[in-house]
Image 1 (tube, rainbow, N blue to C red):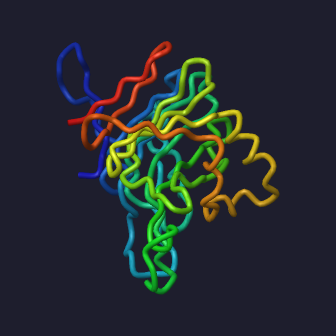
Image 2 (image 1 turned 135 degrees about the horizontal axis):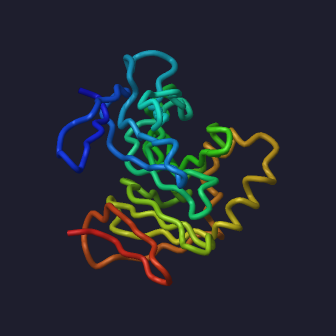
Length: 222
């Protein structure tokens, strides 16, 4: 159906159904309730062209209509989680970034796939930056849940492929982003996390949702 349903909790009936794109997987409501952000898992068109990328649909909750489909960088797919910063000014989206235009001559150093975090400016509903979550010599596959600490000091990302939790220094990350003259180049920079991120091994497997609460972080895994 590729849609979002609005349900009246008083009557437990569907009020309306809003069309989005391909396989909506995660939702985030703006703090004022005026906009609903929807992460679409995969691109809507064919994947055999030179440009293909999944999008975030933005719904006006007053009209219950999609008003924008924000395209992520070329190769973006598997949009898994979407979460607002506590101040509501930024939206974080975890996803995979495919390098499908290069020959498959190697697998290491993010040559084919990398895990990424796209940051959306919610004031303008435009992409602020996309940064890589992989390190040069160690990937961060299956990056899933994302959450920001209440004081906005840290960003937490669960990696289901390595059974880890990343703790990212938010100020350090934004400082590096601001220092970059061409922010689109950050989507190819495997060194950005080198000195601003701590990887925490988890006892369980396949961590998915993450929730920062007070001075703690809750991670669901199996």
